[in-house]
Amino acid sequence: MSRISRRELIKIAGSTVVMGADGRQISVAAQGPGKGLGAFDHVVVLMLENRSFDNLLGHLYAPGDVSPGQSFDGVTGKDLSNPIPSNAPDSDRNVVPVWSGFEMDNPDPDPGEEYPHVSTQLFGTVNPEDNLYRSAAAMLEPFNTPDPAPAVAPMNGFVTDYINNFVRTEHRMPTYDEYRVIMHCYRPELVPVISTLAREFAVCDHWFCDVPSQTFANRAFFHAASSAGAVINVPFAHWARRNSAETIFERIGSARERGLSWKVYFDEEDVFPITALIHYPRLQTFLKTNFFTMQRFFDDAGNGTLPSYCFIEPRLFLNHNDMHPPIRIAGRTQRSSILAGEALINKVYDAVRLSNSATGSNFQNTLLVITFDEHGGCFDHVSPSAASPPDAARPTGQFGFKFDRLGVRVPAVLVSAYIEPRTIINTEFSHSSMIRTLTDKWNLGHLTERDRAAANFSEAFNRAAPRPLEDWPVVRPREMPPNLAWANNHDHPPNALQRDIVGLAVAVGGDSLFHPGEVITVVDAIARMRKELGWQEQEVKK
Image (cartoon, rainbow, N blue to C red):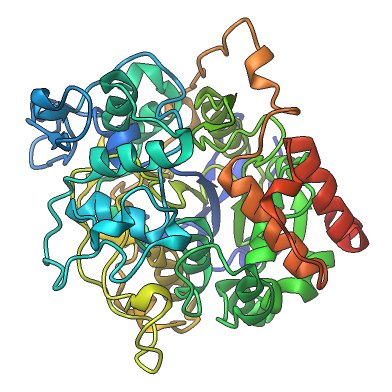
């Protein structure tokens, strides 16, 4: 049996020592009986793409299935639906109810996700009417937002917006079976990995993304509690040159003398980490020291050398496992089964679960957070609430948005040895709550007014003693379909996120212009990124 010396114990400041499953002593974060933010020393975040809470976890609990004293705001047992616009086929059905099925790539095709699309989804309005069937970039003020916008959004425009976007991209009206997919919500047995972890640890049923819009702004808020005024992914030059918001990475780095550290891990199949692209003005100097491919994550977890904070990006291009919905272009579809994302969640969870270092990171002192950047146009029934603008000196951003309300609910699961099974947290969180949690734990100071106002995760840690390894669930993802031809997307058209990442890479790489039509396939997209960023690619290939 491996033992640690008294001197080594002294180095583990503020920690206790317990026995691991194999009889070894391991370091365990402690604060009182293991509650509060002292319940962890290391944080691992896996952020996936474009799913709402109801879409992925809405069926997690039935009303009578929750523990006494708890509640769960899902879809089971509720009469939830969205109206069908009068110009749509089968409008005499009046509504599309929430439903569940076995299709693992719904919604297909990809919904709209930019700010004007989300406004229609939340409020059921197309304002002005000329915005009907327009692209987000061509929409007119007030960008489908009612004036004034009600404090509680009716969440009744998901079907309307899905139909409008379908007509724009497919150049025809969808059938009922084609547009009803936007109301599809998965049952737990179809997504056993995230559902099991949500039930065996903690699910947050009021976690909202920070901006009612798409990827770049919400990923920026996750680490900066600001997007420096940006609401959508374009113009790419904003992210490449003008995203000046300070990040939590820099705050952690400034406290390295206290032993704090950070890393970002991304898939080796991707050319460049999207986190570095979004925060390029602030993070370019850290490419050599803090960005690594996924094999390094698995090595760090196994060796007990995880940093204080680490952020994981899914694979975003070749055979992507980010759970992003499919896209159709010119009659061709890039498939997108969410089972690939389930497999990734399971691999990351197992890396944490099986880590058993005597003095470093291990399953007892590591918090795993699984969440999504934005809802991606998928249905959710809970209205986002008001929010604190990040900077009173910058009152409005793109589209005249004041950053005074949150985006749509997204799935969020917390995994920790100090969390009781079947924990449901109803407290309102947003992406900025991650920053609030880290700054409260390590006394780093708030970044903006948004994270200052956010709640931290201290209430989640409700066990008096750490959960022993033998009581952690062993999860098995569902097998992918036997015919994997559809999953090989090398010659498929790039989805909207993949095209935007290429556009951002072009903006970072130089002064050349990017036209989406230049990348016909996913392989083309990767080649263009490598052309633009090849001079830096090796900096992060470790």
